[in-house]
Amino acid sequence: MTSPGSQDIVQLENIHKHYLIGNNTVRALAGVDLRIKRGGFWAVMGPSGSGKSTLLNLLGCLDRSTTGRYRLNGHDVSRLDDDELSEIRLHELGFIFQSFNLIPQLTVLENIELPLFYMGWEAIRSHEHAASLAKTVGLGDRGGHRPAELSGGQQQRVAIARALANDPGVLLADEPTGNLDTSTGKQIMELFVELNRSGKTIIMVTHEAEVAAYASTRLHMRDGVIDRMEGAV
Image (cartoon, rainbow, N blue to C red):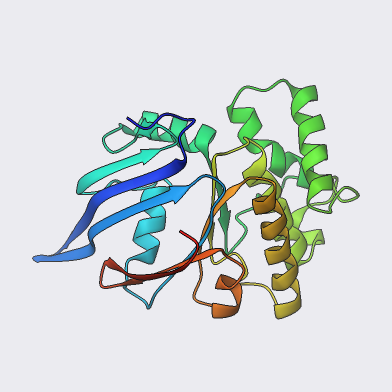
């Protein structure tokens, strides 16, 4: 079994994912083998229906494979039950979405603190950590603002800070610049590069070549399989 200290933080072995739609079986993933080293920065690309979103859902423990084995940071998560998968998501993963998924009634700091609340952190410690993360993503003076008072780029920075709150082994990003203009998207990607340089493993789904260019490795999917890879592996 992979130990938490090993070089590979993600290991997929012969992953298949099938969906039954009516009387038809859709093979979303058809035998994916993948190893991602700690500290990697990967972009997952491919046309609609290629399997990239299914792959991200499996990596994020939001779905299970039909067959195959998935090891994440030393944990064999392939057959964990729902409660165990929730624990893995809470402690091992950080999620960044195209639509930000912030809670509008909460302030910037309260949104960042959400994972810490579920992890049982004390209020003072949680607040201090959230404030530190807000500063890290350039929002140190926006802690008391609500999402509606922020620009799209600022909202995505809040989402990134929230994803970092639990110090995850892997950051998963789904079209993180999809709702941003080109200039703001560039700023967000530069932040991703900084986080990767600090040691964070990042796996990002994108359809934009300009965004994928920031990643060290580009994985192209087609028809549920890895078509090719470019860059460092």
